[in-house]
Length: 324
Ligand code: HPA
Ligand code: ZN
Image 1: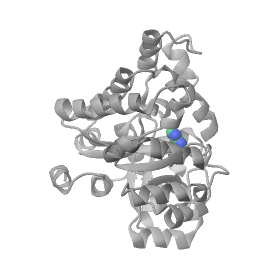
Image 2: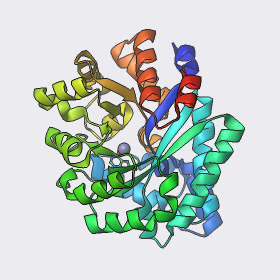
Image 3: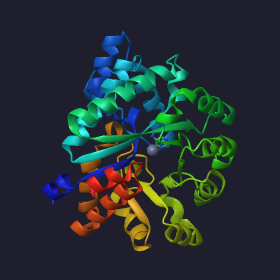
Image 4: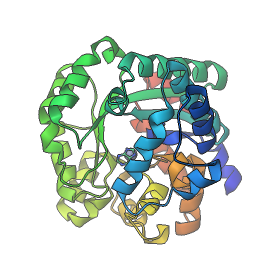
């Protein structure tokens, strides 16, 4: 099964590029930029990745990205991940990035965009790996700030495959971002949003109704609302599920308790993703293998999940055919 899962051409639709920062690179960049880390060693950093919920992770995640200062840093971050992912049989990566988290540290949008764009082209050339870019808004920051970031991104609108919504979900409903998403819609930029990870099923409904998203990131709590499950199935809305993330952030106690088999039985269009691979115990292959061990799925199930991702990816029809 390991060889099959590794060879299976996989598209990743839910990855935070800042969450792909492995401790080794974190230390390299800290030294390069003269930044002090709160960890004495790579091992100590890894040991600190012990989370109780989403917020406890976000604190560590925002701290970790403080080493990213220059376009070269963002290039190296993304290339480091692309190389690893490619080695696991990943052929396409859609990466969220958090401009507000960088702007707050005095790192301009142009720095982030230049570095990520360079890495994307580099990966295409060197690895034959395609990618897409999802500019995410931090939902625990004011909607006005998100709107100003969207306007600030005007020179890069053409480069954005979608906008997204991430960070602390509790108490930050999609409704707050209605106008920002309406603006993105009028600009012709596709939309996705995290919903129903820690937050209630209602947030998934809101993301569909008020933000007009084409995919839901996570969405696992939809099972609490049977009418919503029917709607997701009937409308063919893709959920980008992140199994190891859900375990590490205690959305579920153990992978064996994960709702994935029930979501599959409900006829939903699911994809498997790594979310923040450096923090949650592995990339795409680790997530696929963990599901094999927990649920005993056969090759046909994994083929279907991989096909769902290629089907829902922000790629040209030409590229889609090439990946099928
Ligand atoms: N959930 C919400 N926001 C995030 C995550 C996540 O898992 N990772 C990075 N930002
Ligand atoms: Zn996520």
